[in-house]
Image (cartoon, rainbow, N blue to C red; front, side):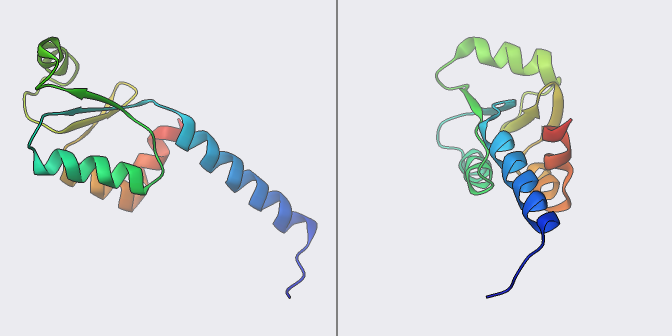
Length: 108
């Protein structure tokens, strides 16, 4: 067994608290529709990252389409927002998760 110093424990605690906070925050809004492969992929990606999100399914929420256009200026889906910041569709969200931008937006 490897002994660790007090700083290692503090760092581990900070990381655990940050991850817990990020996974509990539902600042993420995902605009989706039924039978959309990219919508399913982006939701799977967010779940894989341990992130909670609010889904607005445009197939079931006709007012959501107007909200999507108002918030993003776009009519395509999926669209992922963190707070008021548009991340984009699946490809952009996957890139943001990979390069750390998604975590930066959540930490802001």
